[in-house]
Image (spheres, rainbow, N blue to C red):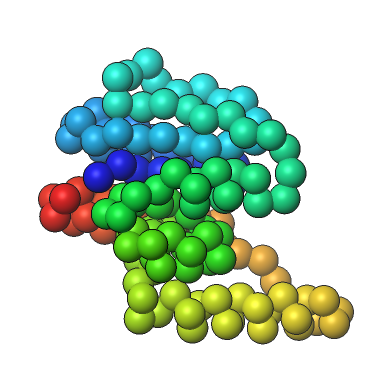
Length: 147
């Protein structure tokens, strides 16, 4: 299993959890982003820099994943695409996207976008909490143990 990270919007605390997990387990971790970022020097961690543009990083991940890989993303359309390819997808707040729930989450995302486009203030996401980080780390450990 390889871990792919939609790194443009991935919180720093989540990246740190991923770096430690990759080192501890020897799992290949690739961060994909359209801006430069520092990653630890490790044979297990690499950075893939892509061009700027709408969904360029998402498309790069979707083109490279293989069945059984894990994708870390808060982007529900990307999660839906990789789940359909037989991958697992985990959100930075610990949400595990599955064949059973990703379509409903995609529909809700589209509904909220429609509301925002019509001028309704839907608010933003809450800051990443300690409980979010703990849930993410726990689910990541479970997925790595199963691999």
